[in-house]
Image (cartoon, rainbow, N blue to C red; front, top):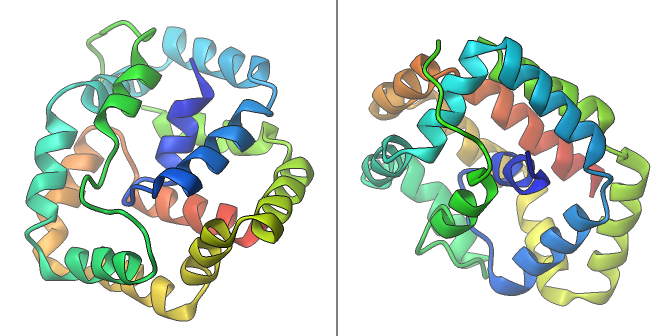
Length: 197
């Protein structure tokens, strides 16, 4: 399992402009991947819901779900905010990046603990090191700084919360849940990482 999938999940719901994306990839490359790979291997062997979530992420289901979400006003309001702050959101999820991140994971049938996997990964991430790197990138890269300023605002949090609670997105959230993906956990992880910056 590659750290790219963790970074993807942490920043799901937004694609980043090239400079910001490159900075995030650089931060990810500096993280020791061995503990994350061990956690992934354990979950892959023992957790059928983890396998189900990975299968969903690898398939066309997520892509179709995002296309549908893009038609909803609450989701679009969040995208427009990101666009207004210089982020490229034309392709909301970098599909080729996701596919590359999942290429080593085999397809399994199964139905429980993708959220547990993410929790364990969050516990092994070197928080202080990531904080320092984010701080460093913010101080030397204006686009990265603008990105972090935009997503640290109450307005961004409010937009995400409104999208999460929107009745128009209930079906998309239900599909994620049925595939072992907890949107509330993803939102919490997103704002935890944002707080590190």
